[in-house]
Structure formats: structure tokens, C-alpha cells
Amino acid sequence: MNGFYPEIEPYRHGMLSVGEGNEVYWEECGNPNGKPVVFLHGGPGGGSSAKNRCLFDPARYRIVLFDQRGCGRSTPHCSTPEADLASNTTWHLVADMERLREHLEIDRWQVFGGSWGSTLALAYGETHPERTSELVLRGVFTLRKAELDWFYNGGAGNLFPEAWARFLEPVPVARRGEDLIAVYHDLLHDPDPAVHQSAALAWSGWESRTLTLRPRQDLLDAFSSPEFALAFARIENHYFRNGGWFEEGQLLRDAGKLSGIPCVVVQGRYDVVTPAKTAWDLKQALPGTELIIVGDSGHSFDEPGTLPELISATDRLAGG
Image (cartoon, rainbow, N blue to C red):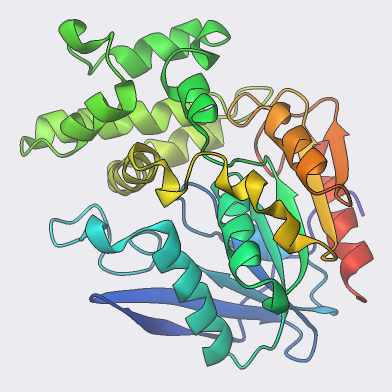
């Protein structure tokens, strides 16, 4: 299998009340009697898409997708003034996953996540290993300070200097020597729409220009939607400013809690957003991990070299 499975539509969907005024959109696709899998989108704040359904054999999987708090089809959307980021943390999302699992009457499920989705997958698996049948991860990200500094405080800018210059445009010159995650927090929450919208588009644009080995106009277009960019940037910045509410190195420190759970990691060699070092560190912390480094891929899940490896992993695990 070298490409996506055929496009499918949900056979069931709804909104789940998860507290603090939040309603989370969820859907089920594929075989209602198949192996349960939950897809965790990236960002945080990226939302799920129809293409995400097509990573799994619809004849063998009961495919669950949901939009995390504040983004996608969940409400309130973080591009609106009424969205409360105080009730949007990693541990709220872990609890939301458990509430959704119970709502759907699923005993155990495979947990599939890339980028931020891998962070949430590890946090969920380490909290609820008895509910996690397997982990399939891509572009592993654990929110350690070095990982955040690499992407937001200049490291990756050495590889993409022209994109980095655009990221710096909204930042006052006098503040460019500060922690840019903190500076962007102030910009994204400035009451002036001209300030916060400009910052959101610059934040979102930086990510879209670094996701793939070769530039892709479809990603540049998707990330330049003002509504998407504002929610995406505000949620990401909120999580990264708070280090994901983890102790430094927590997800790798606690990886032993996943012992015995099959774990497959697909990692692009030239992933600039979440460099391969973190996937390697996870393999050392969880020795049974199957690490597949794709030699000609960047960060995105649908890179030509990454996609077939991800689908091969879900195919191999479908009968487990």
C-alpha cells in the first residue's frame, strides 16, 4: 500500500460536552466492529481532516477522530473572544480522550499521533496504559526546552533564513533578543486586531514553510486562513509557553510506563520541526520501540516517503 486508503465519510459523529463550556467534535469511520483506533491531530490547534481518515484500512479499523479543544469543529473556537485557554491544557485533553473513549464504549484503542499528536499520545499512554493497545507515532515531540528553542528561538532559522525573517517581522526590534515564545504571547493577545492577526499569520506561516522537504502551496494556503491561523497560533503558543504542563523531560522519563505496548515511530530524517534526535531519545527510553527513519522526508505525515511507512504500520497492527 503506497498511498491513502480511499476517502470515506463518517457513519456517526457528534459533539461531546467535556466541561468548562467546551464541546468537542468527534466522528467514527470505517468498520463499527473493527479494531478501535483514535487519531490525534497535530498543533495543538491543527484540527483533524478528511485525509486523516484514510490512514487506516476501513474494513479492519473502527476509526475515531476528534478535534481537540478550541480548534477545528470544536467550540468555542480559539479565534473567538469567548474561548478560555485556561481550561485548555494537556491534561484536559487526556481527560477528554478518556471521556470520549467511555462515551463510545471502547475498552482499549490504538493511539495514533504525529507531531503534537505524538506528545498527546505519549501523555495519554503513560496515564492510561491499560487503555492503550498500541502506539503509532510520527515526528516525535516532547516539548523539552531544547526542542522548543530549536524551532522558535533561532535554531531552525539557520536552515530557513528567509522564512525566519518573515517570522520575525511582527516582533519589535527591541524584543528580538528575548524568548520569542513569550514575545509572541503578548502579540497574539494584543487587543488590536491588526497586531494579533499579523502575529498569528507569521506564526502559522513559519510552520507551513518548514513542514515538508519541498515547498507545498496547499499547506501555505491552508495555514494562511486568518481564522485558522489565529486559533492555531494562540493554542500552540499557550501550550509551548507552559511547556505542555510537563516537568522537563517527563515524557521520556516516564516512558517505562509504556513497557509491553507495541510502539512504532516513523520519523523523517530531514524533519526540521521535530528533529530525529527526539525519536531516537524515545527509542533509548523505551527499548522495544520500532524506529523507522525515512531518508527523504521532512515533518508532514503525507510526505511521499513517510505516508507508506505509516500505513504499513497500521496495516501490520490491524489484527492485534
